[in-house]
Structures are given as structure tokens and as C-alpha cells.
Length: 103
Image (cartoon, rainbow, N blue to C red; front, side, top):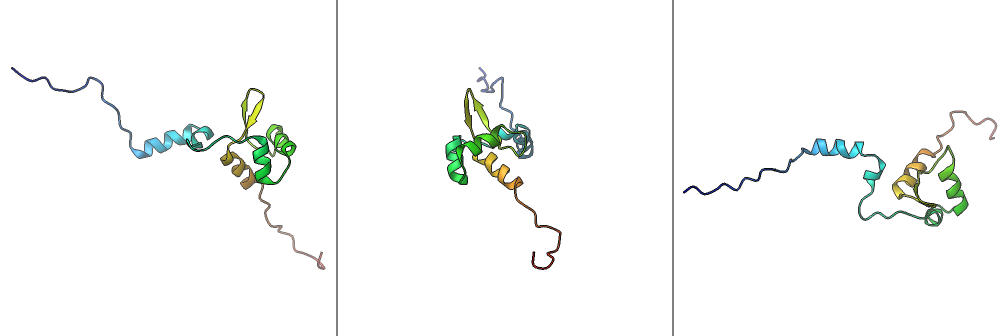
């Protein structure tokens, strides 16, 4: 008698690393959040930035400049990576105008 081969009918598909990277990029901002990253409260963000909780809430609900927030019912929560992105876009560029007369 012949021994039956142990080939499963369905085999897992393995994707190359380049395809995995493209999929994670297309997944959007939520894919950047690792399992160890926790959502922050407005107060925690305010404490880290040295501003008031009201300032954080204002920048989460305005059109521009805006800190991306996660809305959970009536609660606002923040990913630190989104706060860092906000800060990176708020960096002032040096002025191209020359100082005249020490002013």
C-alpha cells in the first residue's frame, strides 16, 4: 500500500518583503502604531508639549494647523507619531530677508 502524502489542500502564501512594505504603506497612519504604543489623552500630550489641554483640543478640532486625533465616542486620543508629524510641519524656516540696521 502507498502512504498518503501530507500535503495540505491550502498552503500559506508568503509575500516578498517589498510587497509587505507596500501593503503597510497603503494601510495608512494606523499601521504605524506598534503593539507597544498607547494612545495618549489630551492632558498627556499637553504635558509633553508644555501647553494647555485646551490648546491641544483646539488644534485637534481646527482645520489648520491640525494635530491628527482618534475619536472614541466623545473622547479624543492621540498617537505620539501623529503629534511628532504635526511638530515637524510647524518648524519655522529661516527668513530670506536680510537684517537692516540691527533690526
